[in-house]
Length: 112
Length: 115
Image 1: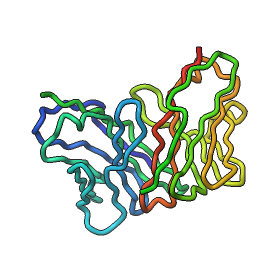
Image 2: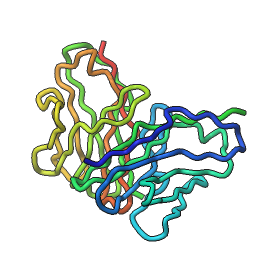
Image 3: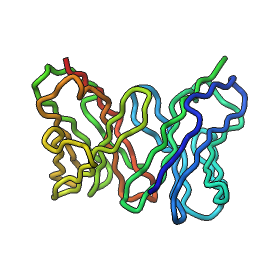
Image 4: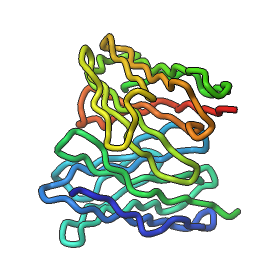
């Protein structure tokens, strides 16, 4: 069965520092992968997605993610974090049933 | 891009009453909408998939009679929590889209508190 694992429940980084959020997936075929961000009390906003092609994908708000098939990973990165990036981040895979399977989420805190 | 409008943003109701949550697709036709439930500090749990003009498909363990889903038009899907109890208090989110190629769009969520 398809699944997504986000190993880090909570990460704290200093403002201006680089960020990497980990995501590992389990899927038999080429996966469709997504990263979403959720601010407190809000819905989810799509940051970026990967379907095929270039394994490094660019998203909104300066985020990027790299698909690595050999490692079954789709890690999210940002070179310099801003205080407004503090939020919950979810990695997801699209399954054959037409549904999104979400990871457990990673809460990002940003220190001034 | 696709926009999903969800209302209300928050609602407080008395135990035993019913609450209706609406999700409207503003600029696309949503043949399928998804309803999620989210507990504090947890991930999204898919409750059901609503399909325009047909019965919703519920995930295992979700009570169909408790969570009534209606998708009568291509722009409106509703979730009704019937005979609500405090354990139904949660954050409910809908999502939809014209296809996965653009990623599904999520509503802003509804915070339900049953007292």
